[in-house]
Amino acid sequence: MASTNTAPRRIAVVLDGPGTPRWQQRALELLSSRDGVEIVEVRLAGAPRRSRLRTIHGTIERRLFTPGPDALEPVPVEPKASDAGDPDLVVWLAEQTSPERDVGELLYLRHDKRQEPAEGAFRRAALRGSPVVETEVLLRRAPGTVVVERTVSGARPFSTTLSRDKALWKIAGLVARAVLGAPGLDEPASRDTPPGRAPSTLELLVRSPWRWIRVVAARALFVRPWQIVVRRQGETPVAGWRNGSSLLGARRSHLYADPVLFEHEGRHHLFCEEIPAGATRAVISHAELPVDGGRGDAPTPVLEADYHLSYPFVFAHHGEVFMIPETSAQRRVELYRATEFPHSWSKEAVLLDDLVACDATLLAQDGRLWLFVGVAETHATMLDELHLFTATAVRGPWQPHPLNPVVSDVRCARPAGAIQRWGERLVRPGQDGSRRYGGSVSFRQIDELSLDGYAEHEIGRLDPVDLGDARATHTYASDGTFEAVDLRRRRLAPMQRLGSLSRRLKRP
Image 1 (cartoon, rainbow, N blue to C red):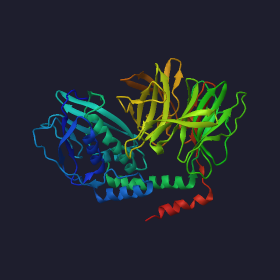
Image 2 (cartoon, rainbow, N blue to C red; image 1 turned 90 degrees about the horizontal axis):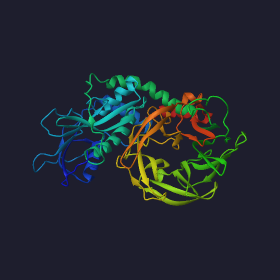
Image 3 (cartoon, rainbow, N blue to C red; image 1 turned 120 degrees about the vertical axis):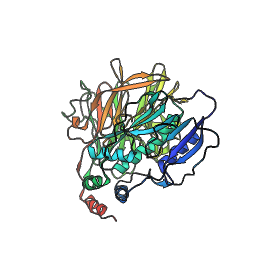
């Protein structure tokens, strides 16, 4: 809903308070920083009521799962009275239901088609078995109400606190985008679903302990190492993985993930993330796959740094070979060039700076380069939103797409491997992290890719059950001759780790 006026859009923001939740304060800060927006009024609608049971439940989950900064922590926000006329738009973020009329244009939130607090929506999802919560930003204006932004967040069944907080930090950015910026959806809104009786905190507190115990016990009793499976190219990427053994060797107690396959001068190469036994950060490793059908050697490191490296996207461009490893810990996207392929690499450029971005995936299409990356709002998760950048040269400059994020959906946003060409179709693998990290891989046909548009839809899915006894998978690779996936299985932990369960449960 970009404005065509040169004068700033005059905004009134309605928050909870005194004692405003931190995520609402964050949304206010983002709105205040937007070009073309003037905050002329800040209203406090009253402090939200939270029972002692809710406080106890949240405290236990924070101790068990460390979800990060508390999105509902009350912080001081000063109200501001308008000094000249009515605002152009009222942004309603308070928990109480927005007014039905007499406020002019009104922007407000709903979760799963209900006008209710996010806390209630995530409690309902956890107790009713839904893996996601859909949040919409709606604009009410004459002659009706439209949806201007939408996002889908994961609802982890074991922790409503973790799910709710990650979603609220993301929603703070969603609201800022909706007010003024990239063109929104601008589609007619469906009718609200009656809120009904939300699941009570008591019901949640009764059911939660068993879920907490299961998760904590599983983490203490089992290890879940990532491994890579390589096979000859199959008829379809979503079937046949149960049969046969991997064509890739591995070192005991090493973790391998994020496979990338790359054919170069008639030889087939696999690059991956490797965490050596006892290490605290990953390196980029390489193995060559024999074309005679034999088993390849275990990967060996080819790129190391004093920070975590993963997702080594390798590609050729204008006669040179490059790699873009994930370096989100450094808040940037780095480009490396092969000086002696495949064993020696030098840093060439920083493609994106001061940005928490993961799993950069490059595509050359229609005379341009396109860079797909998972990006997180402050304190949010990198599973939820996909951003797109474009350039005419690999070293940049890279320009953001006007629709960013082009995908805001935990079920498919984060890249899960190189974009494939299936005949005439471009297919983007995306991660589904709704129920767990590495829940499955969603294959997405790209329907539109242009300087002012982007669209995709799912045409296939690779689930852990397709890989036998796997419990998670999040990357798919193919070079036309070989295919690779990563997967995580569960096995009993070494004896020295078994004591961690009792220590964790005895925490005060």
